[in-house]
Image (cartoon, rainbow, N blue to C red; front, side, top):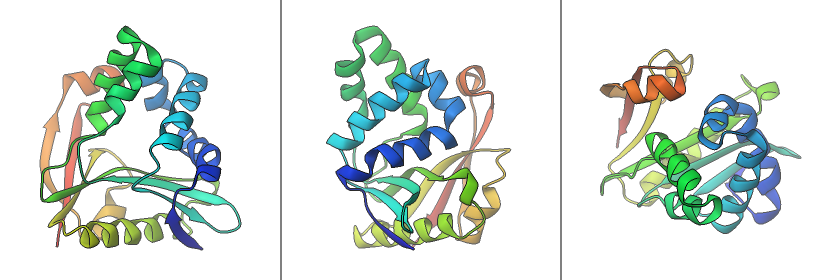
Length: 186
């Protein structure tokens, strides 16, 4: 298996995995998974930078890391119109945060549900850590639900809870009131 940069020919399969892994969140953000798929395919086709896929004869995982300000807000407003675009942008900003100067931010790691527990996520994480170091960042951060079963995965790579967020906004839209900001220092 290799973890490599996203190519235009990978986008449809990568977004399919993203939709499978984050269907509830994306349904809330876009109000419809078909709309989410269309919008995300176009976004990642136009903005493949800092996206990676795990491949073993086919795409098994998809991830994105951010080093700078997110580009998705303007894209959503242009693509979806003012009202729906602003709504989607506000909701997605909860997850897709702008990293601080010294940070890299993991926007998401998605692994095909049928292929979990095979080391795919670990290979992706190794690549994201490598990319953060290559870009001379002093830490790698991500946001995760406090009750997530994936906390042990992040701890395995040396992530620690930096902050605990209580968010009524997130509870209303994403059914989880408490969130961890995890951080791995280099």
